[in-house]
Amino acid sequence: MGTDVGHVGAMEGDGHVRPPTEPGTAFTVEPPEPDGEPPTGSPSVHDLIVAYQKKDRTQYQLLKNDFIEENGAVQDEYIAVRSQSGVYLTDRASRLLPWRHSYRIRAYYARALNPSVDDAVRKTRFEESRWRPVLTGRSEEIVLTQLFSLIASLFRVQDLDRNAEPTPAQQTMIAVTARDVLAYVPVLQRFAAGLARRATLQAYFFGMLVGVAIAAAAIWVLSVPAQLTLGTIQLSLVGNCAAAGGVGAVISVMVRVTNNDNLNIDYERGRVIAFLVGVFRPIIGAVFGGILLIFLKSGLIAITIAPATLQDITLFYVAVGFLAGFSERWAQDTIVNSTPAMKARTPPAGPDGATGDASPRGGRRRRAPRAGTD
Image 1 (cartoon, rainbow, N blue to C red):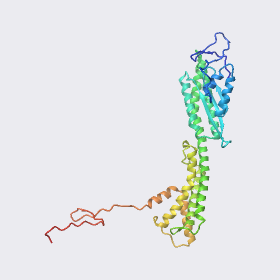
Image 2: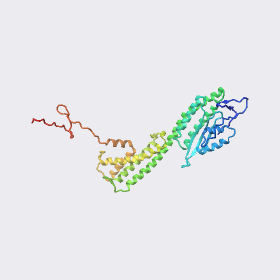
Image 3: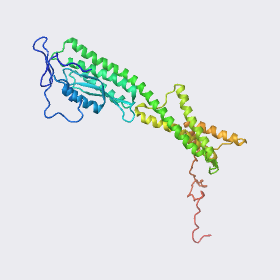
Image 4: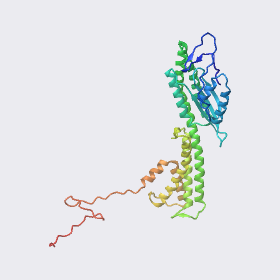
């Protein structure tokens, strides 16, 4: 959506605009030609702006084709009339996953004469750099399209500020636009945060599926050779407890989501971290389920089991494994509390209240008799 050039005044060499000498006279903005040959490689946004603000836009089309080849298709664009400011919204499809698209705002702007406009431009550009890494797909397109509209509106009123003497109505429009943009930024932040949380949860749940597959493969390896043992513990029993722990971890997440409890997932850490956390969740639950069985069998966790059949004892261990995966905090506290406490022994005090030197056995060291005494 490029903006037509002209009918507003001529740009002087210092970048300011000179109003027409006669009412109704049309002038075309023609920045001075850059020195030397045209730059090679991918053109910058400033190169596109300079080429666009010429009578002959043949060079602009050539530069734009190179720009598209390097940065992706141009979804939307705006180029200011009086100032060298412009913004492009690009869309690049992934080479490995063609259905995945990455959107980005590429802009160049001349410093605004009005400080409020300049501040609004900086904040909108910061929001683009903040939300683009944590959003993907349609969510990224929606947020960046909103930011593009805000930046384009600021560039429009920036042209009004380039007049030699802006009218009171124009000054009011500039101030109101900058104020409205700054007021809309917090609204857009809340909207983008909701989209980011949803995208992070999607990555987290997809990671859980991968983690379940990894845990299931490891448990299957443990359960197939039923005759192998770990000390006096059959590996098949360890596999059953680990499976129960993995199921408990998944059920714990499902219950929290059903009850609308907030999962402790920081969307600002990115989707990759959320995916890895989701992968580790069922694996950690399975490990806790198997380890807790070993602690019970080894006697580190003192527990008395009433006389029962072998099937009942197996069900008891599987239930403990499920609880270990369902509540990682309970499993951690149980393991930590079972750690043997190493207490330093203090030698007993003698009749005079002195402790004396302690022997390696904990008793008091005897003094050697003096020579010449019985």
